[in-house]
Image 1 (cartoon, helix red, strand yellow):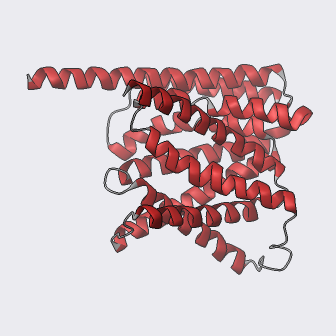
Image 2: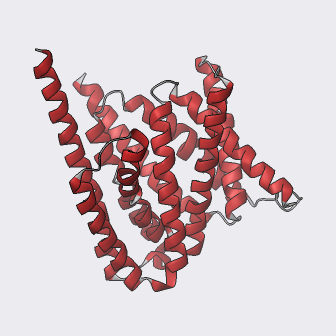
Length: 303
């Protein structure tokens, strides 16, 4: 069991590393953001469907559930559109630093979704996140538009994470992912059809773009999602939270190595990014300790 935990821990780090590489692929792919997300969601949903058929995972769901999953799929599509859009407007480092605020948005929205009281330290951490954002805005004014779009992406990420937190308690995670990715792709398809974007040029991609998109859809989306579900069986939520927070770190390092000078930022940016990341980690630690104390008290009451 201990060996399984170690393997799962290392495997999950590899998955988070892949997630960090996603942003770099977004910068390398030359097609526009809408086409990129359409290809990603459509190809990923196809590969997940193949996996579902292979594993014989049931796809049955009520009409109400399918409608809710469709709504979540549209939110995910909008999240990815703003995520890759921010990369095109700014760069990978800016986008990933802003995406770290997703945990902050989650802490604000969680009391609304789950009808609980706001915890005092979440307000304090919120002020630290705002301070980190202020530092970045001050030194990277050339990327203001990209920063705003990336923050919208982080907010959308928080919303669909909370929605999926409810879905996963009642439905198979792979089934949820399939419906959300497929409906997200259909949502973008309708948009492209209405705006008359489907033409010969849309389907013409150079060889490099095809390779990057296939890696993005299969390895960074379909594989990473399914593998993450499996390894989480052996890891604590605390370990998952801390490891996931390494995504922007891996991504920014990869971007600097692969993309070079375009990712070189002012010193103030790194101060702000580190402040946001440390705040998110600190929030996660306190949340985990709070849950552990609550579980311990419940056990004592049962005894």
